[in-house]
Image (cartoon, rainbow, N blue to C red; front, side):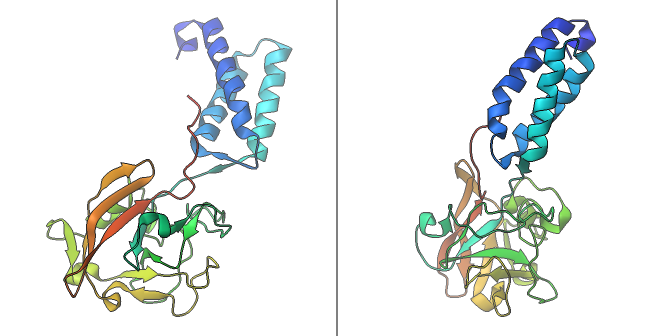
Length: 241
């Protein structure tokens, strides 16, 4: 924007600052998606304004790091507790299990569920095949970009009463990765109603960064309830600003 206003020197200075701050964020094999996007744009803008060898060398270093550091795309799948335990018992933030959360074909280890929890998934044909984040109820469900998994659930709430019941639960299933291999093996994906689920809330409230909670979001046939969570696996440091 500054260069369009004729303030090219100030624009170059700001772009250099962004690149200087951002290069350390690309030190590993993976980087935050936001960092990657901001720095890619900074490189493109500075390439049009570069007037010195120093700037051109700076751009080349940045592009080399961008190619070597693949961006992590965060998603927010819905987590269903299989037992009445705290959320900390449901997830393993340091799990080495890799999965294609973003639906890009790139399997990455960003955290996984313990045996005390299951993913809420979309399996209308009862095939039991969960291949990526497109099959999880979350930000990428049905290849649509949702703000979170609860928004995706609201798309199924035909009568707009704030919960999914009866036929609205059709197509929903739970995937409990019992052998923790990141693959939906036979018998692991079971329809939600078979688990005794009678209702699911379609709204939750943020409880901390990367976690949205509906305190009584899962209601079972016997009237008991458990929380329903929208979790962001692998959520890490603050992006470049």
